[in-house]
Structures are given as structure tokens and as C-alpha cells.
Image (cartoon, rainbow, N blue to C red; front, side, top):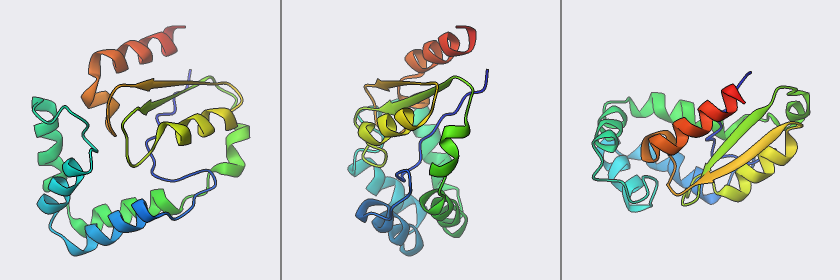
Length: 147
């Protein structure tokens, strides 16, 4: 049973918006450490900033090349998967963080609505549900994959 975990900051179809454009500019003009601090201030990590996994995630992001990260963000921002969503025939689980400033739950709900066999679930977290809510995320995945 295939699984789609979508955390993209785009809409379907994608639209450049102030958040994605501001983030892209920030990536190109800041050190990654500054970007991580700004991301925390914007609530991307929700309220779990003291969690050791968040510390690990921060360290991974801080070690990335700004140009490489900017390239990945631009691909996510500009990809247009909208026309293909109706072709996904497998049951799909779409998970959103309730407090995600990059991918608000309404956008994830729209994604789920565009997929023929999707289930939408939101968790009380920011942009990284697997890290911020690992137990709930694992339970949802287990249910999806074994259900």
C-alpha cells in the first residue's frame, strides 16, 4: 500500500506566495544557522523546541548548503503535481501539522480532496509531524499500512 507524505509549501496547482518567496530569499541571503533560528521564531517547529529530536533536526539543517537547500525549496515550490493527483489510485494518507506555517492544514485538506482515495489527518504540531509527534505519527502510519 503506497504512502504519500506531503509536506510541501505549495498549493495544488503551485502558487508562489509571500511565505515561500520570503523563505527562498532568506535561504539565499542567510547562513543556515540564521534560517533555523528564524524558522523557530516563525513556529515551524511548533512548541517542541526542547525535544532532542528537534535539536538533531536543527543540526541537520544547519549543516546543509544554503544553495542546495534553496534548490530543493525551489523545486518543491514550483512543481505542479495537480494534474496527476487524480491518477493516484492507491489509498493515501495526508498528514498535516495544525500549527504549520508553511503548509497550513487547509492546503493539506485540499490535497486530500484532490486524491481519489485519501484520508486527511491533522496532528497538534508544526511543520515536522514525524519529529514533533512521533508516537501519533507512527500510529497513523501503522494503521494506514496495515488497515
